[in-house]
Image (cartoon, rainbow, N blue to C red; front, top):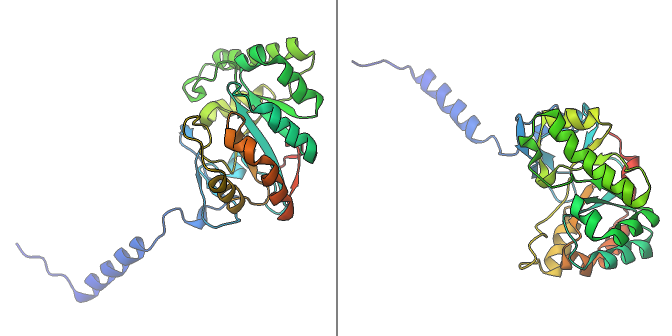
Length: 267
């Protein structure tokens, strides 16, 4: 059997095919203000399109704003929000705190339960020097696999209680999902507990102790990808981060950036 196809039809099909192939992956059309919605459970993800500009995330600022969640601040302001994750102590946090104090830069440290128990003096120092201690859960599980409200609440409130007992302070209500794994249900649960969920718009592979990035490579990444409103995630376990932090803060200041605490975040 033969099918007759007109030349015009063939031409139309060819033009459509070319148009599809020319659509760029990671297109800018997603933007940072569109209602980009993640799958029911997701790993936090970023796509950097252009040096000095905010990346495209797999959940938009508008969508996250429904749950008091953030991955960056105002893209029109050259403010940076510096955060550190610490699942354990590796001997570099004191130096990091020294540099922050020298530069009068506020930061947030997202800690887990064992850090409260093994490093009480460092936790107290963070508080005394004006930094935020955030909730990274008590035992650092994959929270996207936790759907029951009671189990989610247990991870969050157990850390709160440990912090309160150690410092005699109330924990600031900032939550960061371990490994960036989250679900919409998690976002709702955190909001219901009075938390702001804090993702990030700039990070790099700094957490392998036996394969630390070279200082020059780290500086290049962290200066070329910085952008207005960035929430920066570094690990305080990183020797490289402790080594470059003084130079890095100076460089960001030279680029016209100022530093703000998470309490100034707005969607």
